[in-house]
Image 1 (spheres, chains in turn yellow, brown):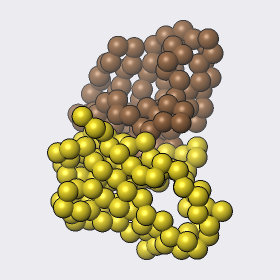
Image 2 (cartoon, helix red, strand yellow):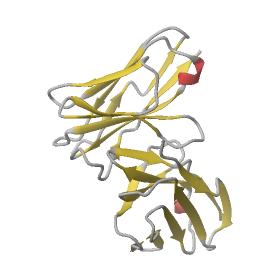
Image 3 (cartoon, one colour):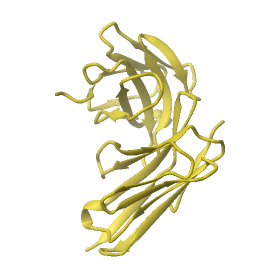
Length: 113
Length: 109
């Protein structure tokens, strides 16, 4: 069975641009969460989506947005990129809404120049 | 908001030595999870603890959840080079999982 897949794996953007990151959860998983991991730190929670609705939001500015599609895949959008947005963006899927085991994808490494 | 702290930040050990990382939450948790992230990899789930005072073992790894459900520890007996990586605790209060900063374990063969 395929695990959580994310695309792209690496990308480079310049300040002010926007980026869209994509995630496909494990088949049967209805919850997708997004995390930002800055080098040397733990993952920071950005969003959780369950059944296509936002169910949780971390302490991130409105430049960050996300959505979940009917097939449970998800997109994370970041507008007006800042240098500080450079990080590994991790998508995690889980079976249900209440946090159980998270299955992480390999991540999308974003570099903002 | 909820904060989860981990100590130490780094630990160098000689292969065969034991290793312990500690996790403390600013709020009472409904459960705590532990993850391992190898260098260049993504976090991989190790275990979830739910009950106050719970102790679980996985081979050389022992996980504990404090009586007050605000702290936890991971102990590795007789480390091996395959144990290298960063160990994260993640506390669950409500729907949001808050990760600690991690303890990076380095093992000298």
